[in-house]
Each structure stands twice: as C-alpha cells, then as structure tokens.
Image (cartoon, rainbow, N blue to C red; front, side, top):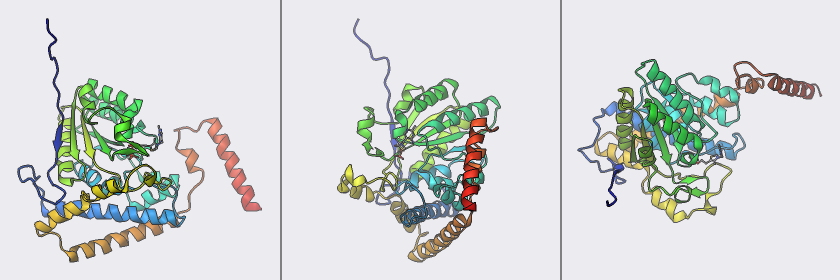
Length: 359
Ligand SMILES: Cc1ncc(C[n+]2csc(CCOP(=O)(O)OP(=O)(O)O)c2C)c(N)n1
C-alpha cells in the first residue's frame, strides 16, 4: 500500500497597508477618524518615549534599556484590538504597548531606572513585563484557563519575541492552550534576532506561525509593520478566543531597528544594508502616508502632536526622577509572605544603608 498524505497544512500571510502606504480596500478595517488618530498618536508617542529613554541611558540617568524602535505597529495595533478587561502580559520590549494600555509613562521610565516600585503602578489585568524569556506564557495560559472555567467573557494576550519560541515554557504553554482550548492569543514579535542570533539559526521552521499547527490551533503571519493588519488579525483572534474558539498564534513579522539593548552593538553581527532595507518598511511612515491620503495628517498636525507628546514625556521623566525608591520594596513583593532568608537579606541591607548614612 503506497504512503498516503494524511495531513496538509498552510499558514496565511496578512498585509493590508504596504510600505508605500497603499491600502488593500477589500481588507481595510472600518475605523473612524478618531480611532486612526489614536493609533497614530500612540505610535508617535512610543517612538519619542523610546528616543528619550536612549538619551537618558547615555546620560547615565537610566540603566540598561531595550529599544522598541520598529515595533510600533505590532504593539499599538494589537493593544487597541484588546478590551480593557482582557489580560495583558507584556515582555521586556513592550514600552509602546504599555503606554497604549494606559500605564503612565513615569512608571515605565522608573522601572528602567531600576526602581522596583514602578510595578506598583500596575494592577490586574495588566501584568508586569517579563524579563525571563517566555515565563509569562505559562501565566497567560493559566489565567485564560481560569477565565474559561469561570465562564468570563475575557481573553488573555501574551507577547514575546522570536527567541522565546525556543524555550520550553513556550511549548508547554502552547500545548496546554491547544488541549484545553484556552482563550489566549500568542503574540510573537518576530524582529529577526534574539540578541545576536538570527532567526534562521534559532529554528529550522520556515515560519514561527506554523508552530501553532503542531499544537492543534491556527497560526498566522502578519506584516508586523502594518498597523491595520496587526489590528485586524489580533481583533479576530481575540474575538475568536472570547467566543470559545480557542487560541491563536500570531507572528508579527517585523524588525528590531535598534540594538538589542544599550549594552549591545549590532554592527558586530548584522549588515547595515539590512537595517537600511528595513527602514524603508517603517511602520510609522507608512501609516502617516495612509493618513495623509485620507486628509487626516498634515505637517501642522505632526508638529502639534510632537509638541504635545514631548511635553508629556518631559513631565513623565521629571516625575520618575523625583521619586525616591523605597529600598525594602524590592524584597516585599516577591512572595505574599516574606520567607526568613529574604528577610535576613533585607535586614542586612537596611542596616548597611543605615550605617552608611551614619558615616
Ligand atoms: C530564561 C532567560 N534566558 C536568557 C535570557 C537572556 N536574554 C534576554 S533577552 C534574550 C533574547 C530574547 O530574544 P527574543 O525572544 O527574540 O526577543 P527580542 O529581544 O528580540 O525582542 C535573552 C536570551 C533571559 N532574559 N531569560
């Protein structure tokens, strides 16, 4: 008996707005002027926030910082596809998504200045950023599972990078999500690198989206520099999750235009020509062209927006720098009840500080 094909699978690619700002009218989401302006405002705010953070780091006013330059469409488009009551699990490059989610910028700056207290600016359903790669995926699948058991009309959205798909936590989370049909969407910002490791050297899969198929649910690859495609695909996945359709994996195909963090030098492992090619696909520029064609954008509009956003950023930095951290807080919120070994460390540090002050 000859071998028979028992399975055929495919992965879709979605783009609505091309790099020149041309829109596919059949796929264009019906968004009013106010919503389009909200998208653009947040993309510009995210870019200016990022630029300021890099400057602060260079001036010694911030610790190591990972730029989100180039990720504007995937972060803003996806957050605005969520409902406020949906669970939100960001990873460490998620500054724009956090801003769009309504987290005050002063807390985001404070966090990267090394102040643990910044997390007190967060409350469920907004989680803290996950620094350990992939760990947040299990948390998101868990809360989604709980929401399903409690019959709540909510979904969980969890973000991570391409490198995260090589972690065990990712595969365990995907497997549970598929088996229990949890209302979770996996949002992978494939920016082509995990620090210095290019995507091709990290996995032999042609796409990251196809990994979902192995776990029994849909995966789609979306142009991650196209805010309209990101919004549409993410909204569809969230609606499906909330209505009992189970999980979806979305691969936002994008590029990290900056360094991995301020401790990294990408010229050591990638060609400048590659970066220049990706700059032509700039997510903010193409959306601006789209808005200009719609008669929404003008140079005056841009100038006012930049002024408004820059003022907000300066105010947030001022507030972040004026804050005096409460040292004990970095011990206080690790466990609900502080274990004795942690208490010992805290007491030791506090008496060290007291002694220093007395000197
Ligand atoms: C469990 C774990 N292992 C290693 C690291 C060190 N580390 C920080 S970022 C990173 C690469 C992450 O790449 P990716 O998931 O593609 O996200 P990107 O930084 O490209 O946005 C690594 C290995 C970590 N933070 N956590």
